Image (cartoon, rainbow, N blue to C red):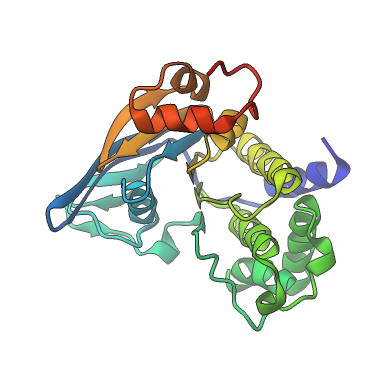
Length: 268
């Protein structure tokens, strides 16, 4: 582990994080004739990747976990906290769920610098500006974008903005991580760095993490388990290597074929 990653992990442990635990969810969202019906369990300190084609329901599921989409049925529980329960009419607002969320649209504050975007959540929670900025600087360095710390968000490239958004999600010491295509705009070296930062954070803090991705290579590199979602339903579950070794649908077989030798140990 690099010195920067050690410093980030050490500060994450020293600062009081939100209470965490296993993430247990049954997400039911109806949109006309289309229904998402997905059960998802993510143990503390583990990463579950949710893969699926466009329109399959994976991003809707993540938005429901985050509280951005209301459940029509089911529940979302994190440790001993109930974040949503449709039957009991419980729906904790997103800002009170204490989650680290990165959506495909990163939604940085355009007139703030990269550093201030990352520090914003901690400052809003009452932390001293200097401490919040130091945490932000550590994360920006870990993600190899420290040279853009003073750059306003609207001047960042897509890959830089994505790394800043990831740093912002990690900075608040969340109770769980919800990441939607967090590496899509990164080149190969940037993906390697970002995956390492996410993995180290999850293992060091013991939070559950949900990774939505189109790329099986991301799942093979980072996830403990994989759930494949098509047409609003889970069609395959298992470890990333087990899923890659025995695709259950043509979509999954296509993901394996698309690896094109990028993931050693996978036989296509």
